[in-house]
Length: 585
Image (cartoon, rainbow, N blue to C red; front, side, top):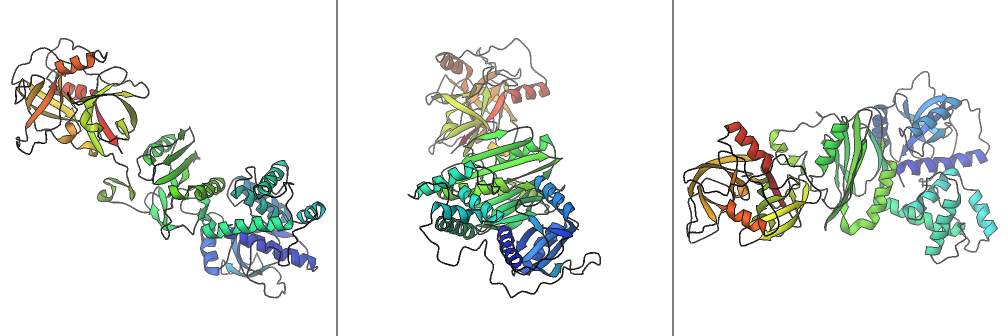
């Protein structure tokens, strides 16, 4: 249970006691109580945060010992309308309510008393004990109530008490409808299911003893997790967070970061950024590059919102963001796989409580970053990187890719260009080539044509590839010469090149001046007995590639007759056919 709910419900218990004692007075004005905190310091912080959103925030010490945060005062009719509108817009918590000021004591916010808002008349009352949320009965609870007695006890429940019963049933997975305090068919079915799960007679009406047991378990779970309503004024987000498991870390626009507490393994990001549909789509792609968002799991992206669920053997995460009024807001929750059952309930609470607040988003300049911090990092979050990256190139108009078997070592999955999943159709250790096919057909910007006719030694060639693996986002051309038509040991299937290639270039297309592929660059051999100069490289000949693929039923394009291309045209053609192939563990 949140501190907000705890304070509000304790306040209601005191009000009921006062009304029973006849302490009534004229009710010509009212406040909207939106939160309560157990200490003045916490209440001051929260009131200060709310004041950034609402111009008429006030704070009063309550007779219960808690410190209330209210809006107003207003005429009672105006207060009722404002309460309805603010709830409907998600600007305030759903458990906010009208207060008549009977339990207000000293004002603590603002510190100076405004002349047009006099303090309510004080009510003399003995000091209240330490508040509890909807205190459970202190007298022995009969465990043999008749159905009529159970219904009578249920009828005496206040609206907040009925809400809490539904919230408890929801928390334990028996109730999924709206929490409105109305005990209709859905609530009755949930009560019956809870009774049945406890090997009790499923009547659909909880006895007082059963209700005490349910609420005690629920409050214990809430206390253990520290679920509390948090309104983040800088980000303009209100949400219930498990503050026993996380604590505020820092602002890293577009994120408000909450780190784990006491090794809980739980982290939270609040997402807040001005923008449009392009911003939303960019954020959808960006989050999926982070280590905290595992690649396995369903994704949904629409025009105005997205959801990402990820899971691996260590963690699970859920991300949500929505676009409204030129602002993108949402959250990410990350938790250990071992704690999935409990965190699934926490996630349900967070999803149900998330509300954008106000018309502001996190200021991008709130926490500026230097270039060193941005390099390889995203606002302090580790970017997920592949175990290995090599080069490859398109060989069919539907997106089939040729690459080196070197990139397929112990891969859980293979992608091209970052996030396009591919399946391995062929892995041939003898030739060193591999064929990848897309899980859905692609329309590549360029397709290789293979030159299988004899070549002239000394021909200028270039390899298109990703020499620095995933550090660069586009392919690079490295130039050299065809030095021999065979390998050092006379291998007819190889072409020896004078070309200073790097590890990431392996699998890339080796092209001549016309942009025609004469071979596929092979990885450098790891031979301790023979260290070759750094500019000695080898390519699998195009004729051998054609022969091997023909055995698999793959027919390659033949090059049109043309002369040497201008440097910019050669660069464009090579880049269009080349892809980065990534191996993910």
